[in-house]
Image (cartoon, rainbow, N blue to C red; front, side, top):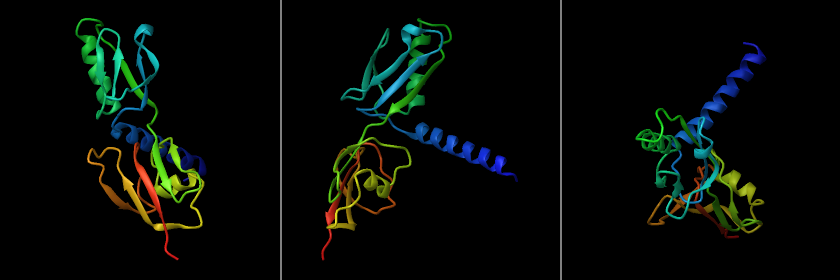
Length: 175
């Protein structure tokens, strides 16, 4: 196999992994999406930020609730409602422009909120936050999932996948 074929294969894998991540991604408040209706400029929006309820206002349809849905499910919802009297055969696409942030605090150099990226692990999140302080423990890490309504704290490792809306805390180590 030539280098060219390997590079093409890797590019296809990265593209399909990214598409898979977005296909599985569940929308919530704070996400920014784009809605495109082919050939209908009045129904195309380049940037919509989901409100606190995970919804947005859309012409002819009113409030569209996207919270907990994938972008593909929102596409289907808009398509079926537009098809019911506004357009004959609407072609709708919904894509995520910006994911809601995750938050990291405790013994990191730059605590705060950071933009989520698909495939983000805790060690990479720590790097985004400037790295660990000299008093940090790389074993005493807790995580609260943004998707958990009960806000239960769980233990995490450096290989734990970070999700949008997560809150990470790095404790001090014992010396």
